[in-house]
Image (cartoon, rainbow, N blue to C red; front, side, top):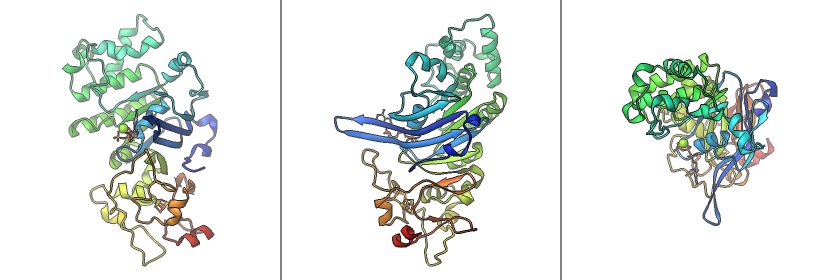
Length: 357
Ligand SMILES: Nc1ncnc2c1ncn2[C@@H]1O[C@H](COP(=O)(O)OP(=O)(O)OP(=O)(O)O)[C@@H](O)[C@H]1O
Ligand code: SF4
Ligand SMILES: [Mg+2]
């Protein structure tokens, strides 16, 4: 299936979250449609962090929100544990969805400015109608877990806190719901550099302490690589590569992934010269720093073809199918060959050779 990921590789019993062929489209005007996410598959194991990487506008937030059913995807299925969320009615969905929480990019605007920290952290509990005697103790405990002193912040409102403190409040609010899955959408990109590492450390610690699985969305390759177990690379709404994050720099093969890696300082040279069995071929993968095409009218065939230095007629005519090219390594590109007993590599076969192969 084009654009498929890894969902079929693991048994249903061990997966916390499964996303199957998810499509997110936004109608614009009478006739046009934004193709934000086109046939995404993913799965998440207990305790795993899956990074979703891609440049601005490639559909990361749309995917994260659709997984949360905010709003529901246009089509496809999302299952949290054994429950399929996409088929639930609004009332049923509220409870089921609570086990999955989302942390947004801009913490200040995701907090109601009129509410105090103690009320903000307890906000989600209204879903359960919970107002037990131990509520305050539980809020205090959670605030401490995210590195905030309850005695100091208890009655403060968001404008009296720093950006980092607001993000800690958002994390506390999510933890109060005792989630299985935390979806973090660029949780540090609006924060000062000095605070970013603290929040990333907090998220990692929190994941361990609260036994969470995590989806970590970002456009920064280094951040995603460091925090994730696996990375999914998204381009214009399509998954182009999924691989263990440890192999991101040396084993990633998709030309788009290589282009993203070339944006890391010091990685330009390595990204530009992937191994090729055709010695005469030079592949300047960092050269195509052109703009993302419009998701209103995505390119035919491979969506990356208008920026890909390896693109051929085949790339315009046919959408590449997602294939497994190594252990836990999947990608969709016509020009990645997997020679028998050898490591997969980028090749520039002619279209005739490619089709024959
Ligand atoms: N509600 C909406 N209505 C119409 N188009 C939308 C809507 N939400 C997102 N889009 C469009 O969908 C595409 C994907 O947007 P999305 O916000 O998911 O990308 P992103 O990868 O999260 O980008 P960024 O890194 O800038 O946050 C973009 O072209 C965006 O303009
Ligand atoms: S399928 Fe073609 S256009 Fe797409 S990434 Fe591969 S070589 Fe480039
Ligand atoms: Mg976004």
